[in-house]
Length: 296
Ligand SMILES: C[C@@](CO)(OP(=O)(O)O)[C@H](O)COP(=O)(O)OP(=O)(O)OC[C@H]1O[C@@H](n2ccc(N)nc2=O)[C@H](O)[C@@H]1O
Ligand SMILES: Nc1ncnc2c1ncn2[C@@H]1O[C@H](COP(=O)(O)OP(=O)(O)O)[C@@H](O)[C@H]1O
Image (cartoon, rainbow, N blue to C red; front, side, top):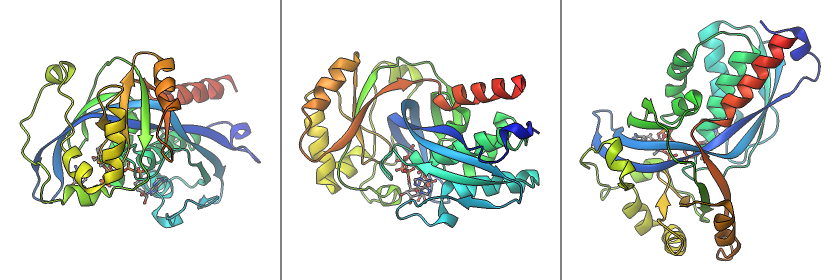
């Protein structure tokens, strides 16, 4: 258990929950339960939601603040905290405030990342002592994308995204555009025209430039705002869809190039420029925190 000085009084701690990009995504099959078998490459970007956590000694898990359209009981941060409590018999509780920066339902995995950050941060704050493997197992029932955020390393993913192998990739700058529409992951995966039998590829094929996202044709046809954003972005480089969208992105060697493109964006579109990272900012924060605890 950590020192009382770090859990006392108004001791809020802040933790980053970064976005991910799917640098490619192939749908290679469908399981009996309806879930799809994927091949994907995850990389983080240094654009993050910020979670504020304050340990409580009464065991309650309370959300402080609102998240539009998400009831407290459905909030992935609350569900993650409860999952950790159940797995550990921990008697401590937490107040959770999420400073939302990432667009919701955009394929950037913000909700999944919030859940992963809650698991990792509370494991440290509550002193529950799970290792990364155990936390990743707790993460999967919360969502297919949660384990990669717990592990915090860019990864080649298979299965529903839970079979992960760390990869070292170039870390370019990305211009990410968030078209003004929301795409339902479930609607894409149940779409009759979704390709579900892509031939599996290898990491070497991906590194050689095979960066197809099988969800793209369906999403582009059904969501004109995504089609427009892709068309505009393709002036600057290879325009890709992350996950099931709606966000699209392109890579740039230099930050200034990405910012120059961003300056010329079409009116009414949101987005940001961020750096690709193979190591999640969450791991750096965890190292800082652990160093702090050791010094107390
Ligand atoms: C497609 C991906 C790629 O990274 O990203 P997003 O676009 O959502 O960010 C993920 O696999 C999404 O993961 P996540 O958003 O956690 O999905 P879940 O909540 O587990 O599933 C939402 C719904 O999508 C369908 N689903 C999801 C994943 C998958 N491999 N096959 C599916 O058929 C299921 O119908 C499920 O009910
Ligand atoms: N803390 C949370 N942050 C964002 N979304 C959440 C959260 N908790 C639950 N959700 C739900 O998860 C859905 C998917 O969110 P998100 O991870 O942002 O998108 P995506 O899965 O497309 O990358 C949201 O539309 C919302 O209903």
